[in-house]
Length: 348
Image (cartoon, rainbow, N blue to C red; front, side, top):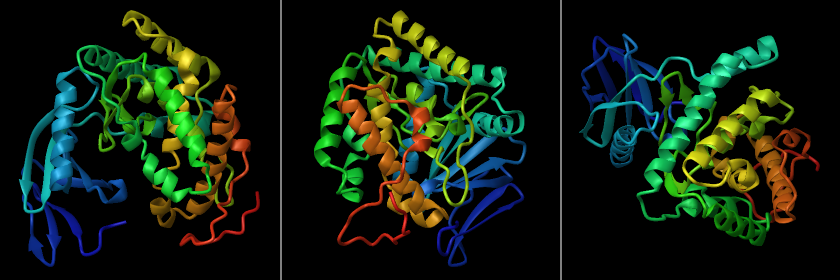
């Protein structure tokens, strides 16, 4: 979906962003081919004609900050693209980075899972290598930095509570307090926020617009079961893109535990639920904004509310959370007296 009044076209080595018929940008290095619009109005992404570079364009301040963060993380050994240059024209900012590949691991996983019934080991191993490299970089960097807690902002907790007022705020805050306490054993580190196989390519992780400071391990642990937040059977379609085999999943966790031991922090498997409950809360954020863009957006939102209630109940009762059980959870329709959300008639 394009921004109102904004037209994009690639012409002979130049990317033009036209508004009201005026050229606002002229960025060399192309020709550039549009790839996608970033979610929540955060800009657009283009690939150079030869496939070697990626151009990211968006609101100046946010875009340049993300470009600088990407360059810094690359210098610290994180598996992210190398930034070639940054710039600004008018109200827009941009940066050009090396391409990490064409097809995401998530897209490859989905093709294999629905065609073969499983994810191929060679690609699961590539995924494992990426999440371990990210975790290693977090642990190395975090050792030398003071503790910083950006969980409330990074997980969009304020938005979660605002959009889901009948999901008991006391439970959310209790879960957040417990997870913070348990995960204080891990150093604070830059966290991707949306790490998953669809943001991973053969040569690293992309799309760092959700970066925040959180406990090392949050990204890598939660990337393993990310697709379980799309596992419902909705009236429109089944969203489960793929699921790693138990053996592949176990190998990922074992590799992360080995990395943790090398850096002197507890095994992530001992704190899986502490990491995962944070992702459960994150998955409920900004659903109101996403509803219009999805034919089943409201159903997905209701279902994730049910998932959150289920996971919170188990976590605060010190019972294990099983991500693969989420598909069997009934949607939780909000009981709101005054809501601008449309009603679907879904019954719990």
